[in-house]
Image (tube, rainbow, N blue to C red; front, side):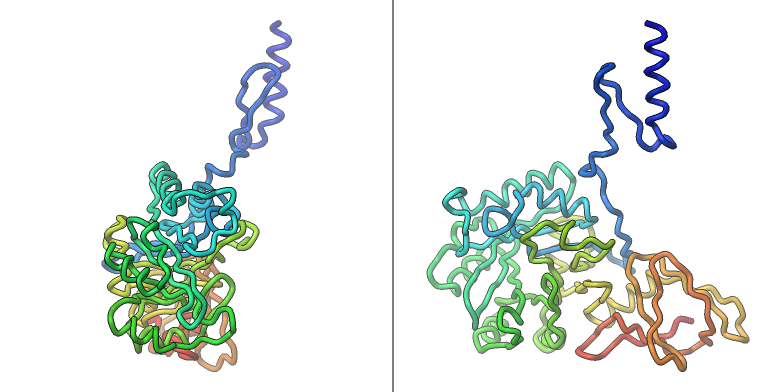
Length: 359
């Protein structure tokens, strides 16, 4: 018996490489490796807080199996938590439910399941629905709703009014889809003028709508970048930090604070390491993310360290092309004091980029 126990100890020691894969002994016939349960691990995406606000990484356009998505609602929440997000909204279609024969249930069910998982993980999950109609109106997300069932009405404008009566934030989705034409129709201008649309996606899934950022300033809409995810997140966005997200600058980590920030327009769209939003928030992110060390003042030699997961692109001096500031790396170069530096991944308007000095 003693020899058997000694052999077991040696075997486990061989299995435990560098202390990173320790087996748990259930008995002498079953060993368990809890480190292989990837669902318990969260990717830590670093996007720094800005002065006065917490920076929350959010996705406000997500589908589950209760409309035309591939995952159960609680798995959508876990997936987002695994990928480093702080806030999500479940926005299943009201009008389009291809799995209805199998899941003919209350429209609130997916939100209920998702919010329960969010509570378990300590993650904010916002109740929402997607009002799904053809253009010219198109698709709109109603966020922070209380009862999705009441949005199932023939007239989509009545659905919007019902959502607003519940205290909703209305988000205009993918304005350039499905016809590759980003157009503000009269119905949108009327709704915006009446305060019935509050934000718009400048990026959705894998599509950017370049001129939409100008609408945000013209019409005072908050810019968003969302996945509109239907498939599996780890299959669609495999690189670190590549999942589209809306950065929200909130006073605290609560649902009420998120809603206040959205209504105040404190958002930046983040997609493929591109940031699109108000210049003041883009500059605040740049200041928070970059550390500047002056090596030689007379020669203008400095070190620029990127302390975030955003791959900034900068152009300065006589450079013909932008050079990258890779996440958690340092660039050493001559950038004399007062030099104008253009951040070509920070878009403040169509074909206009943030320009600032580093020191």
